[in-house]
Length: 234
Ligand SMILES: Nc1ncnc2c1ncn2[C@@H]1O[C@H](COP(=O)(O)OP(=O)(O)OP(=O)(O)O)[C@@H](O)[C@H]1O
Image (tube, rainbow, N blue to C red):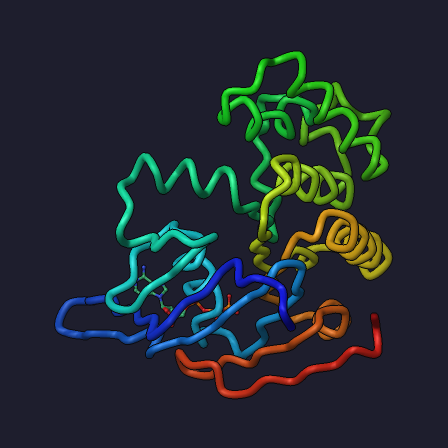
């Protein structure tokens, strides 16, 4: 693939010290994601998938190795630059939506734009457009607690994409959804991937979701052990 690399890590290592124990959770992971590419990470519970996602998203620091996002080495830039870069270039989706309960859906989705210093009116306009796009145009003034699980997850997808990020990092985005609602979330992610050329890196136990990605990587005990390519889904 000749598309530019958006997110890359090399020799990524993470150790936690627990009392006398030194637990090596990531043991030198190399990974590269191109613009518009969709990658799934699968693997047993405890193999290090979420830890890898946190390090790639700059939410935690590695013990060794590098992460390069949109040309910037995350370990070599200061905290202020890092959060700016994260806000501009990345979107995050979690199994449990992490929307803020005291704000409306519209405000939740507009939030990344406001953090990026966009004027409120414009931010809300753009958030309303994207919420319509994900089928929530009639729910703008609702708070997360007033929506169904699937509606909340669609709002979370909208929030992850409002900044037109280069890459979305998703941790079990369909983990708590029934299969019909999960299907809507896959379709939405695929549409937005095609339309906006956003890359997706998705940690999942869900084989149906993994089958919609360009590549599936398997993690075992802190390392990526195999890769499968499949293009039957286009
Ligand atoms: N802050 C921490 N301190 C100590 N150990 C940790 C910490 N965070 C994670 N671990 C350990 O690292 C290992 C990998 O955790 P991680 O959450 O990355 O796994 P996972 O593959 O995402 O699992 P799951 O599929 O169950 O979500 C686990 O054994 C976990 O106990």
